[in-house]
Amino acid sequence: MKELHLAHIAHFSGEVNIPGSKSISNRALLLAALAKGKTELTNLLDSDDIRHMLAALSKLGIEYQLSADKTRCVINGNAGPFSAAAPLTLFLGNAGTAMRPLCAALTLSVGQFDLTGEPRMEERPIGDLVDALRKLGADIEYLKNPHYPPLRINGTGLTGGTVKIAGSLSSQFLTALLMVAPLAQSAVTIEVQGELVSKPYIDITLALMQKFGVTVQNHGYQRFDIAAGQQYIAPGKLLVEGDASSASYFLAAGAIAGGVVKVTGVGRQSIQGDVKFADALAAMGAKIEWGDDFIIARGSRLQGIDMDMNHIPDAAMTIATTAIFATGKTRLSNIYNWRIKETDRLAAMATELRKIGAEVDEGHDYICITPPKQVLHAAIDTYNDHRMAMCFSLLAFADCGVTIRDPNCTSKTFPDYFSQFAVLSR
Ligand SMILES: O=C(O)C1=C[C@@H](OP(=O)(O)O)[C@@H](O)[C@H](O)C1
Ligand SMILES: C=C(OP(=O)(O)O)C(=O)O
Image 1 (cartoon, rainbow, N blue to C red):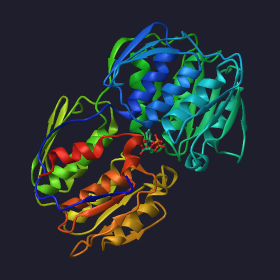
Image 2 (cartoon, helix red, strand yellow):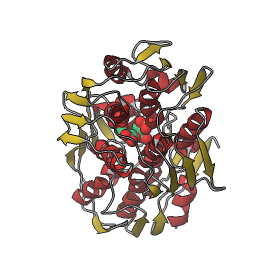
Image 3 (tube, protein in one colour):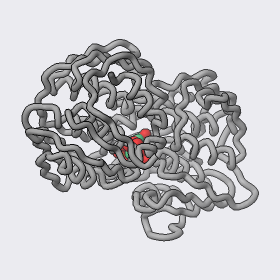
Image 4 (cartoon, rainbow, N blue to C red):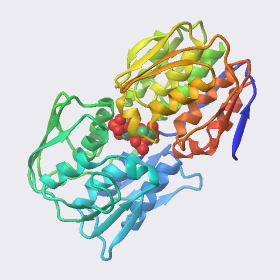
């Protein structure tokens, strides 16, 4: 489909069970593949990013059985790093949660591995991770441009010792290093240089490593000590929580449209930092109710906020479009790394919000949005970015509705998004 026309939606309410978390699905798949024993994952996400991880694991010789609806997966763990007799090329699309952790895991493996991706993946940096892995003895080559994929990895194993990693661009580099550190030849100490971005994603990593039997001693987000001689052990069954970033669109819709929206599968007990999106929405005036595995948003008058969004970079995009329905300005700051994700999200957000009449001040690491007196109809370009498509669907609550170009780009994390959105729209 080239374009999706969403006419004005007057009411939005109901319940939606959110598909599995991308971040948990891809971490759990990789750890299950490295673990000793069988892992049964339920509520696994079925989307492009997970498909790329599954295809890579399959090429690496990992056996798994996937249910017909692809949400249940039983993985026979390899009890350690992979090995491949012939050189392999693994295509990882634009999945950061596949590219970064697999880059690290393959340095431990036996064989030659080329990691490739979509054109945008070739513009997303990975140099900070490669530098850290090289300090631990990894043999990694850049096949096109220094510091960017595609990469060639000649598996060497990793030594151990103290290694520094830059934290200012992506937490996924630290996540990748943490996941392989227990399998290095000796103990590893990781020191993060500079202020780490997207910190709550490290909590997801540590929580999952713990579920697979590995412990990490950490001193905040600055230093991590990982003892040698540890092995990942399959936890048996593991339920993947609903994706908190995906939940944000429905919660925002409830808050804007004045209905009552309940998202299930993710709640107070979540290990995902993006549940804090509900607090940002509450700061705008929405009424939020929390359960262990659900969140309810009720509509009310919304006002603009001024907030540091470094802890919830993905869900923060939903606040940017919710801001159109609030009184006054909204300023979202400390989000430089929006620029190195699926697209330059600061530029894309500013361009598309201006199309609907908003006044936008876009800075190096912030965006400030003043809603228009009257929203203009526009055809929104989505830049092959699933979150641009999903967060701009909220413009359907404006009288003029909205047109979303290339809506199928939601397949990265939420293939069924627009049909789920339609179910709650009246
Ligand atoms: O570790 C993860 O699962 C993720 C970390 C975040 O990236 P950065 O750490 O690059 O900000 C986030 O934006 C991404 O969608 C998923
Ligand atoms: C930044 C994102 O993805 P990735 O995991 O590819 O970094 C995202 O899903 O918003």
